[in-house]
Image (cartoon, rainbow, N blue to C red; front, side, top):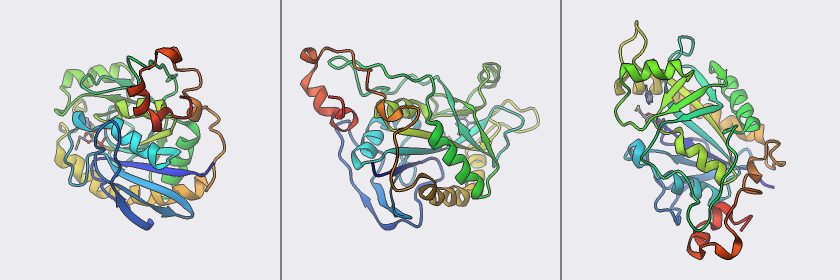
Length: 288
Ligand SMILES: CSC[C@H]1O[C@H](OP(=O)(O)O)[C@H](O)[C@@H]1O
Ligand SMILES: Nc1ncnc2[nH]cnc12
């Protein structure tokens, strides 16, 4: 199968450079509008698609990002792999602003978002014990190191609703839970990518110490933007290294991300809602 790499850019990363034949493409989805048009092109012989999560100019708040439309649009364009870039606060002493961290677990504290493509009329339960793709995450770590970043592999990301930053009590609680990083957008993006059978990896860029650290002031947007400003070049550089690592064609995912729906759908074929099935054409067409 041909590879196509989708990149979701987070706060401070609203475009990438170097795509050959690049153009912004409007993608319609049955789930509404994606955050923006998608920048589609090729790099090193591999197709790539870039979508800024908050839209160019940062117009969508964390709770109003249409993650279903974003993931559907990338799947519909033919993406096989999705790399999500995210600004995060660190909940650990040893993950400092400027570090890059490959996420491998999540705690979902969001509550005001659509979290599934499925529902009444077509019920599905995908496995999610390992929410990211280990193969893709490995390539992302390699690319980030090659670009010169300090990289940590394996971290738990707590996704909060926002848009306000956390209270001190919450920040301390998340540390006690064993969370390493905090952000507002990792969920339900990762859940939806799994439902859409996409290999998904998240590279988090530490911008601050949230508010728990006794020797650092509480996070504010100025801090996040200042760190992102220093890191955006690194982020763009590592993205250009991914095609050579993934290659133009791709073997089946060893972890089965690309077959997540094989045994997930519960609703009897005769009882499925044709309207919902039509909306699931890109996400679940393989098994419906
Ligand atoms: C500008 S700080 C809060 C904002 O930054 C992060 O966004 P993203 O994950 O898209 O990089 C965080 O989740 C909040 O949305
Ligand atoms: N401290 C923090 N909390 C939530 N989201 C963030 N994004 C960047 N820093 C953050």
